[in-house]
Length: 72
Image 1: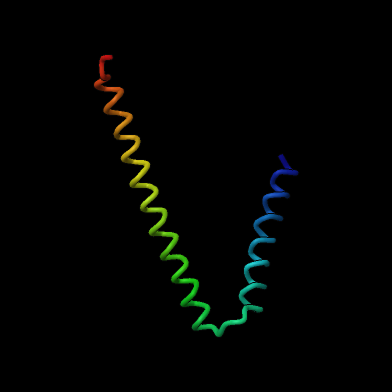
Image 2: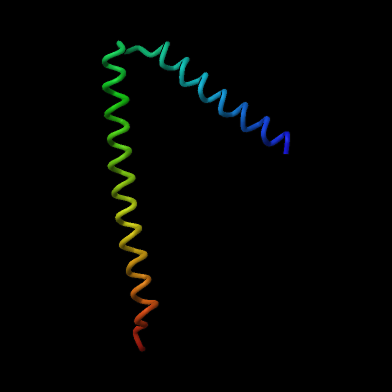
């Protein structure tokens, strides 16, 4: 358990330090970088919402098939 917690802490710390390093060494100005990050976040949000809607539709179809099975 202790090894897993140490690994998790190290992975999170490494991710944060890596992100900070990338931000500091980025070839864009602060405003350009914030704009690019905001655009990426918005794109990801749209993709996640579309995927969620698609999955919901699939699950609703499966539920309807379960509730009302078609007789062959």
